[in-house]
Amino acid sequence: MTERLVLVTGACGEIGQALVQGLAKQGGYRIITADLSPLPDSIKAIALEHAQGDLVYKIKTFYDYDFDIIFHLAASLSSKAEVSSEDAHRINVEGTMQLLMLAAYRSEKYHKSVKFMFPSSIAAYGMPDLNVKKSAGCVKEDEYNLPHTMYGCNKLYCEKLGIYYSKYYGQKHLDEQPPYMLDFRAIRFPGLISAFTLPSGGTSDYGPEMLHAAAQGKPYACFVREDTKISFMAMPDAIKSLLMLLDVPREKLNHQVYNAAAFALTAGEFRRRALKAFPGAQITFEPNLRRQGIVDSWPEDVDDSLARADWGWQPDYDADAFFDDYFLPEIRKRYGK
Image: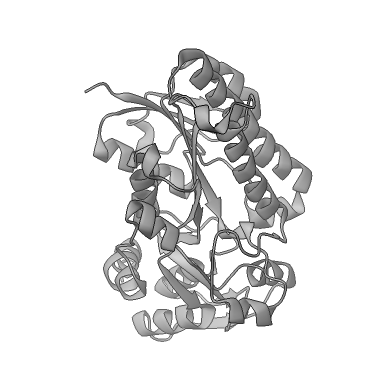
């Protein structure tokens, strides 16, 4: 079987490291990585090559590679993007558009389908107020698409760009699409939590930050209210969903953007889990208005029925399995608890 050449941007991030390891475990891929940072030891031996530097200025070098698949993970995330919105737009939108142009060019020139896998986010949603957020419950892909953040606007727009380049670029007749067109597929992820990498200051990281602090016996002031509720997912489920969607034959997909869900918890429920695991943990709530506002704009949970119907998605980790079988054993091991 011929190995497929894969580009993974943002390879040094939490998702990137887990994805590269997942691809290697599955086998059948030659992996090129890209990131601002040098590769961590966890994946250094896996990558065939690593392109270090600003992605926007590196993309032109990738035209010499015959990629079969692109996983575009590189992004400026919610909180950072609010502080530096112009730079976030350059990274999130310009970087994505240039990669889409590269993939579309290769698809057209060489008459081969290039799969473009795009992890999107619940930040693509924007709930108008807390009452609507609570009453809406599980939100579908085409509801409340009015993001409140630069990152959310970037993600939603890039979903639209991906659909444009895969369906309308060159204005081909919709009934006459050749099989070698750019194949764009996006998953809107909830807050992702890895047991093997430290939280990196993301807007949904208050849950894992709380548990890491509790395991170390350090006090933690949570930056959102106790009643704040959003959906979360264990990192292995995120990688599972990406690899599942990657392998689905194109004709079986009725959509190009899918929600993927696992479990939804309040910050107070995270605290109760932390206290149960580490009695005496010192956890308080001191909401940061800016970050609280961002999380309040995200839905409490998402409806992933399209993914379940089209490609059989279901998570391995509900809330109990996440804490008991995945997260807590690893952080106990990390901190010797």
